[in-house]
Amino acid sequence: MRRISAAFVAFILSFSTMAELTGEQQEIANQLLSGDLRQLKAASQRIFKQEISNPDLLDIAAEILLTKYPEAYDSEVDTLAWLARAIGSSENGRYYSALSEVVSKTKIDKLERHADKALDNLPGATGEQYVAGMYTLPEGVFEKEESSELVARLKELMLSGDLASLKQAAKEIASTRTVNQELTDIAAEALLRAYPSATKAQIDTLAWLTNAIGSTGLARYKQVLQEVEDNSDFRKLRKYAEKNKDKLAEDSVVQYQAGMFDQPMPDYTY
View 1 (spheres, helix red, strand yellow):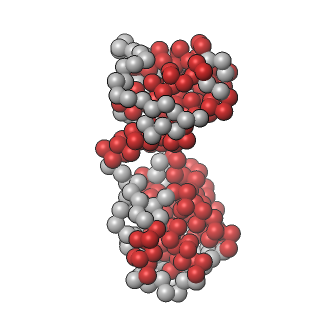
View 2 (tube, one colour; view 1 turned 180 degrees about the horizontal axis):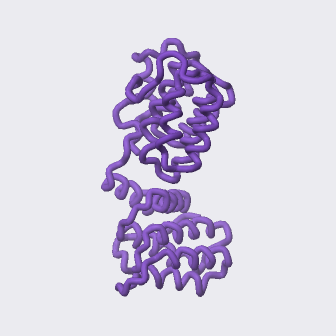
View 3 (tube, rainbow, N blue to C red; view 1 turned 30 degrees about the vertical axis):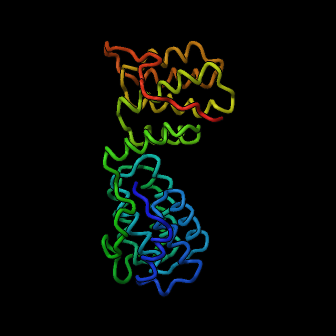
């Protein structure tokens, strides 16, 4: 996902049709347009809890929902569900068609349920209906990443040297079902280096590395997960290694061994 600065967003909004927003609503608009899923979710929750019905703000929310839902990753579903609930909480029939589209076309059960529940809060299709394109999102905001961009960003996260970034990258590999041997080699190398001396506080990150490896289905990593399953001191990590090993193909291929990733690996800070 491409991101733009909050300052740039504020600049864009100052020249748009947002004059009717209050100060707090302007802040929510900035969050919606930040390009960051966490801020998008937080803004959606604020709209929902405050039952904001200002169409200048809700048009942004509707445009983001209609832009994102067709190709949503697993990691984005909760945020989009909150976005649908926020639109429904407005009780503004302008968004009946938008939510109906999500209900009828999404392939994600959770999003369909929440959009349908949000739809029940609307009085029906009243007035001019919002359709995709009525609000123009700033260029680059919430556009789907090209595969090469996604791989480059995840590699940077994985090699940044801290467990939080490593865990985030592993979650994204799993949720986006990104199959890239270099990224999976990094995950395998980090797992093999860390698991023998891991502390309890580190196990969740290592479990996510096994999830990332398992999501690829690549037979190359069978022995890696088998080693962790056989030797980890932590039952949780052994169970995750076993579960994800079973997701890998049975093909007869060269197995990954520690040190095969020949680029510098950071000493991860714990």
